[in-house]
Length: 226
Image (cartoon, rainbow, N blue to C red; front, side, top):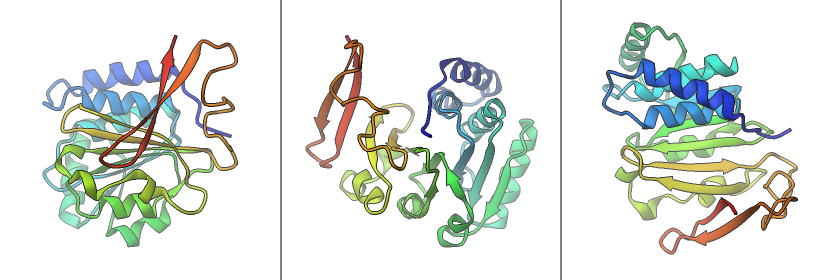
């Protein structure tokens, strides 16, 4: 089994998130993340949140979980953060699960993650990604506020090296304070492109363009319609 994209579900989540987040200034980020989580039909969504953080992304993920019927969990570091997050989500009409603890304490409990959003303002965000127990059908990993980190200090291939965690493609989007996104392939899918050869689709209407980032050394594969 692998992640399968659903444009209809993505569109519904996007529209609903726009309605919920009208009062927030992070417009664009929450809607995009919500649409991606719903579009990939995420069954298990995990996010990290820090005290005083913007709520729009969290609301967007809650909206997505409603459309997919999935589980939405937020990881926070302390009880004060938990209370603030819970209060603000209740005000928005949401009630996700909240787990308190450091990365090592909580990530071992969260098995089968297929959509994850971490905040680069949290110092241990890379460790959280490395410890994440991902779904066997693949996963989408996202770093928000990515522009705030040092470019040379983070590489997806380093985070995902070893075992069955295989990077299919990654992309950086200049949305908000930057979104760094990685698609991790399903276990047992050899080429990571859902059966495509990587150069074109069976019909010849799609081709893949490979680009190597000279700074990070990461390989980006972009799907382009002819």
